[in-house]
Image: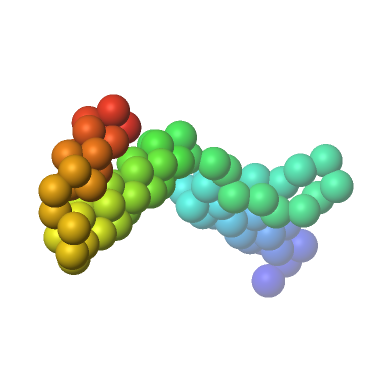
Length: 83
């Protein structure tokens, strides 16, 4: 393998690595550390899942609560004001 082919091979490897970094959302900061790129959709979905988990917890508490009178109405009203 001559030196020219070696240089071309190294450049091709570096380019392919750059494509893979871009595909998987990895970039380098000023210090050279690799950091994942934040996805706004993923953050929105995490917030939505967190809110749904809170609502499910409230519904489970309502379903297992022994006092179903006024506390049930308060819990339902609390759910309506959250969502």
